[in-house]
Amino acid sequence: MTEAELLAIAMTSWGNALTCIALWLTVLSGYLVTAYVAGSNMTHSQIYFVNFLFLGAALGLLSGHGAFAQTSIKAEVLAFAMSTQRTEPPNGYVAWVVLVFYIIATFASLKFMYDIRCTDAGK
View (cartoon, rainbow, N blue to C red):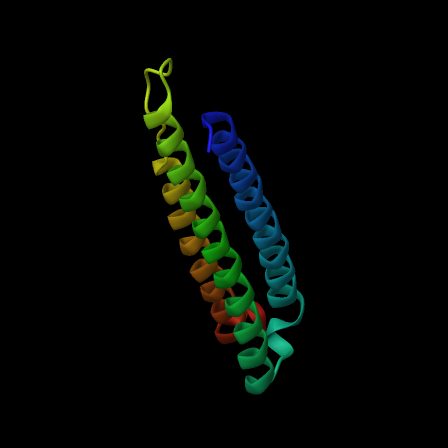
């Protein structure tokens, strides 16, 4: 495989990782709107069901982001090793910092649902 082919794989993987984040933002927005509008009126079984769906979708999309980012980083590192002209190695830590931020935001959304359900603000 040539350096150009590896870089094409890396860019495609980065695009897929960003798509996972965009889909995660869509799921998160829907969950937050549902929590704000209807969270205080839901039964326990409805809350469990909505939280189960939200966590499944969110963690699936975030793990997809991680897998695509890892594939991209590996392809970039291999392309750098093959290169005769590139002098700076690729850095892939930004994808992992973003992933940690989004995981924290996912669990903060669950806390938001809990606050809507269990405080006077939601009633």
